[in-house]
Length: 183
Image (cartoon, rainbow, N blue to C red; front, side):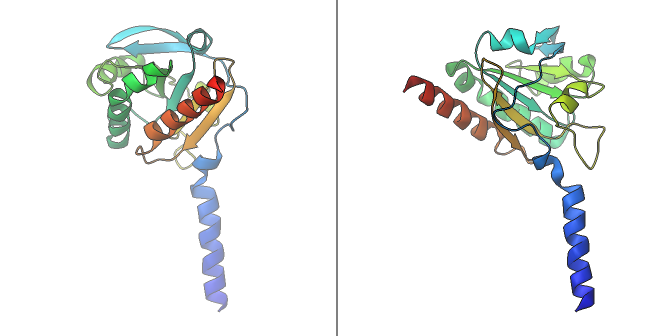
């Protein structure tokens, strides 16, 4: 009996240490930290400013661990396929990873299909300001998506290392925000 309880305690302790990325993001209602960084869209580099993008409408900001990895490629394809839906809602999509701008120039063309920008955060300063660091590998960002209102308020946060629901969830959050504003 003591062995079972000790095993359960160790399992719970491990889970609380190894699995917190879903708990490590900024909450809805928080002010989104502003940033400016190098980004690439269709292989062309430019300075991306969150404040500037928010002047155009809401922003879907998503952090991902690394370009050209399986989950990040799937997620980039999903965002690229849904970009017309984001545009119809007036939203800008920007992905951020620790990759350098040279890598992101290639990734923006191949995996993002030149549909949306990806930004460089090589020192993870932006990811840290959004509490989006992967707990088990702190040299990478966690897979976390934010929907940010034009006033800079975080409307929605979703963290899950599986790329499957990030697009659907952020689109739903944008639609709910838009519907609330219309009523």
